[in-house]
Image (tube, rainbow, N blue to C red; front, side, top):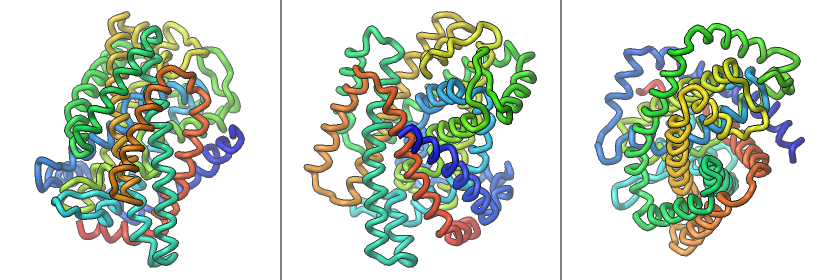
Length: 436
């Protein structure tokens, strides 16, 4: 499985992200969309109704990525691929902007309008409705069904096992208790209703992100004189035969590219087709406007928060050295603790647990939308919630390190399918950007 993951995520996935990113960027004239004045206007005028605003939908999508994605994901990328992985993470983010715009805008275009006035949709509905012209109605439904099954599997592994495991790795002596608390909170969220998930995300994500940004910036500003050398180190390691972290040789450019790209996608979810399920629920002015929020999501998640995590870790490595045997979460928390004190370790650690819970509920929503592709009946959804809760607790008490390989493979396959669909529907994405 390791070899399959290496080929899929180290060769195929980066190639598809770069190609689809270049094609879609040209189609939508990304440079024009990103002009500051126009981009800010598109974001500020997107909403039609406050209660289901595009910003809340984006918060739900960010809830599915922040925390474990931009903390453990970045840390793991640096451990496995060296400092050069950060460079490839940035490269992936640049190409991912247009990909995210495409999948989000198409999800809004092809979403369902429920009888109660709300919206639901996702990448599987884009495949079902958008691809029938090219492969036939039946095959389009099957393709959407395959993707929905992968989305449910990803919800179980990435949304339950890995999230709860990462949360409990903060305070290992209390992992059973944390697992029980997370499971109970997950049950309560499911009982309260999936439509309220955006409200929970809206309450959690902005303040948690603000705390993380403030602490990260305090370190970066304090050690500003190290930043130029760190940039040089990142670029040099990205193209070196051997990547160096903490004095230990890594696997070089191949692993830097692989882990930089995959962990970046794990963090911002661009191309893999999960976050469009959140964006599709927004009562937005047009598909283009929500697509702009998709672009902003990549900028906020990868280019800002992930970069801050990377610089904090590399600053800590330059000053205090790095324990290369650490897992992702421990490496990041130790960096904050080394540079700011023990209080920062526990504050960021608590934030990670809350971030993990936000991701749990977001992935629970993604899985529910995927099940809704097949049936609206309650029993399958109840079974899904029960299984999710069981896996949430299991992830807290078992060693989930090997699960990362399966998570990489599932996300890789989803990304291959979704980006291929985006390339086929590229002219529709172009039309959406033109009528904005």
